Image 1 (cartoon, rainbow, N blue to C red):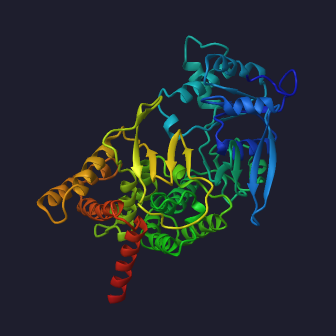
Image 2 (cartoon, rainbow, N blue to C red; image 1 turned 120 degrees about the horizontal axis):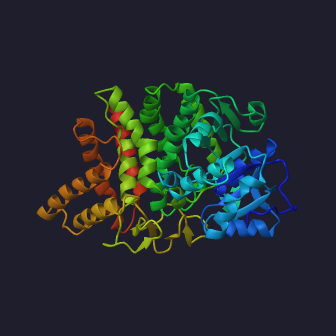
Length: 499
């Protein structure tokens, strides 16, 4: 592991090491680094499936790119070495790389948000690798190393955006769209990169001011990703397992268009983003999904549910509430929150299992009783994400709430009380109060949710009202969460017609 794959020693142009080997690394970062003249070594942080497969292919891996006409072009990307940090021997070999790479210039740190934590293994690996690249062995006094970091090591914040799935039947081969307009944005505050070389690559942009990257991120998260997060749990519950079918439904498209107009545009405007920039981002996002060749697994996209909801949708509620005391989230924003909580509602009282190594409990959820659409799919049951399962036939799916089970347990107990009570009974009224408490508890995990403010109290109550309607669908003989959305849309249209 981590030995040169095509020569006895590393070439002088081996100037980049990537910590992380996920789809975005293979589909975006490695090709860009190679295009600017840096040969690359890739370190898989956990497991060794990609590292072993790439090593067997003498450092080559394939990537499928869907073209606008639906055809697929397979590209072959070469790396200089691969290895795994998941075992003692591999990690030791990785730490020996700096002595073999005199031309080392770039370190791509490509791990998920959950990996970027103090004393997290990936952070420890990065610190030790940079230290090893500077001094062989740890100096007794860290002050010189700290001065070196300040003067010579530059941390470039980045944003990546490329719809990337995998080849059917082979998760090691990325399957991706053509590079969009902003596929990779790199912050370079100290002008140390070869900006001309990077910017010459399709979809790559260099930002010299913090505010520029901040706007790029805001547009990606709070416009493009926001409408995706408002839709994906809805479609997963409706037994739609790919985004290919999501953006073509007229009701879903109208829902996203109205949510964009009523909540998203005003929210990004108060944070300094123009209507024109928001509209351009939204139109490009919808066009990218509409051609349907790079569809994503709806359950895979639905992972990290509350974190994504917080940074993509709820942040817009918080921003609008802060700027306008009279602001109230629209019925569409209420529905988006309610359907997300419905997705995080388990049908079994206890977790099915515990996900190693984090100890995160895995719960079982239930899709709507009937599919909202009839379409052919080769996938009836499958594994997505980190060993989660979904089954369109039984309607069961596994999920984690990323809160140690706090959200799922509250919602599970409250939903069972609601569904087990007779309609109109005292027991149901009591269960309704319990649902309100559970919904408020779930929303209270959000960063800026503040019950001392009337807007959030009213929002929680509104979400609870829609949430119980979504629960009732679960036990009906027919219907789906999409029917609840249609009722919300109809009520909005009726209200607009009478104004």
